[in-house]
Length: 338
Image (cartoon, rainbow, N blue to C red; front, side, top):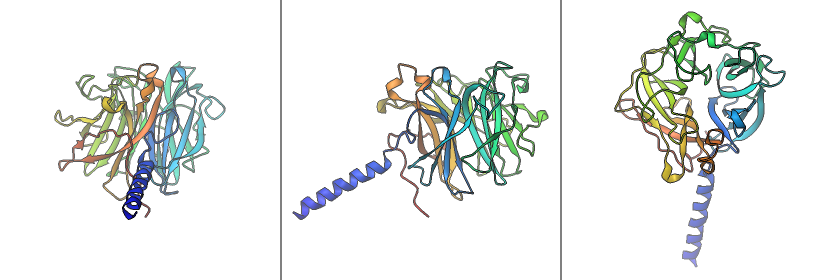
């Protein structure tokens, strides 16, 4: 009898642990291009996403989700709509946002379609709360006119914002087919045009590190890490690579022995793992990568608009190189309460 009770207890514990950790994808529904933020105001984590599942990437609003442990996520609702009165210069195609906290305010950068230029451009909206309401600045912060002269590629999309811990300055990055960066002015609503720099990593192929989009920048132990996505978002081969630099505006160095961050794992039905953001747990050398993958039921039918958000641990070796992340089906354990 005792043996049976012990066995049943073990089975129940196993089921409970699997239930707690079986969270991939971590958000309900189709979402892509996840941006993760830790708020010093609320002491919570937030994810902002491209709303997915619409033909032609035609979503027009952004959602925000909150969590205390990186496993249980609460839908905080739609925090910005680019097809209504909130953003008067845009009509849709709400894509790939990023956000940063500065002096009690939250600056939310996003790309959307501008009917006047007939191009995708980058806007910024501001709030006192990580969940809004957000107020748009009234005009794009980045347009096609801000493209570096040498740049070759697509439009002004896939924005990233970064605070340099060494200088205290803020930087903006963007591009599709090219990577551009610039220092932000103190108002966070405009860039210093004279600092606009072409940063596109050189060489590579679709099987290695050829730059496509989705720049993400972070700093660790004296190094600036630049992450980006390779190939097309509808391809199972969509993956993440990286390089390092000694300044926020490059140049970017690629170690040919260590450039891969994350790629598909077909044997587990995991495809198109890319367009990521990175989270450092405050005060710790503990890191996570938040990314989207193609929903496995849509790999052969509209894969580029049926994506879902996942999270996994990201680690480094003694030389500071990123150890390639193995995407999981269940994700990491929840953070422990302090």
